[in-house]
Amino acid sequence: MSGARTPAGKQCPICKKPQDEKFRPFCSKRCADVDLSRWLKDSYAIPADERVPDTIANDEGEE
Ligand SMILES: [Zn+2]
Image (cartoon, rainbow, N blue to C red; front, side, top):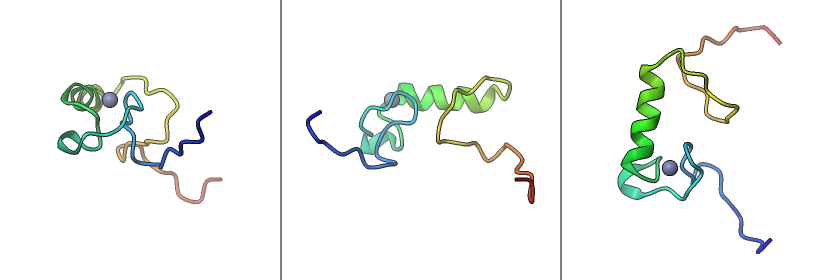
């Protein structure tokens, strides 16, 4: 470990590479496309990730 810190929200949610200002929050147009495809394909199985689409209904009061 080099001790380098990885600030949350500074990485591409798709591939975890550093974000590119032009494609934030992604690192490239490709990853932006990947994310878009996921949104279009609602049935796409999203792996465990800190990113949770707002399309997922939150059950209030259910803990
Ligand atoms: Zn990426």
